[in-house]
Image (cartoon, rainbow, N blue to C red):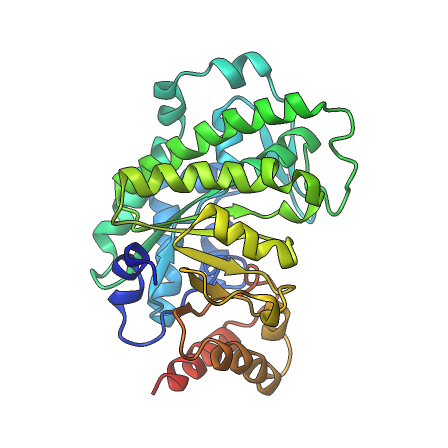
Length: 337
């Protein structure tokens, strides 16, 4: 098991650790109260007081083992000069990126544009019980590039990069890798114990390009974090790469790997030195509790004698009932007894 993730999350809890992606979000009534006061989502993410408050709401409600800072992966692109608006029921809409700003923005100015995120993390750290872990996160370079070029959620559009030459893709990825690492570093310096890299659109990459577009950028960021902050944990979430998950783990070498719900557990190489996390399809939190428990038990049984963090294979869905989340937490905690 990875010693750094043990120190930063696993060893803070005698029993199985549990937290959820999008655990602070639209399904919580207390979140909705604060969201109504923050019409602009980007500004909400940068609102020190309110973003701190919603980050801590799941801890207060469920007593989870970790909180993840309330933020958004697209803040990196905004800081690099690309304006973003969120539209109800549509998602993010981005303007054209500006190459001169993107490539020439200084490190100092980039950090300045994101300083509220770091202030929020510092605030959370002050309020969070010492035994709880604080998770920061970034979008992996490929996923940021997808939004940057497509200017919206691709939703399975595999031709979104058809007009970009490979050399240009690699050039953009390298710049995004640099910016993502800076953001990781500043979050750690502000108090984050763990960083999670979200490569949400890795499943769009053809196998022949997976190494250059997904594996290498993730590997370079993970390597830098582990070299500069050896006591901190790094979790990767390369969503949609299916059987290529084993090659990803082997080559990238993260402390933890978050499984998406399409991963076949029997395809996993369990000899990899990695902490597995997640996997449960969030849709099972919408139906009957018995089916939810059955699916959760499948993951709990499979990883019973292996390092594992209970989580989902994607974020909690907006229509999820908080009571179902509570029951799931109780079920997982009861499984440990």
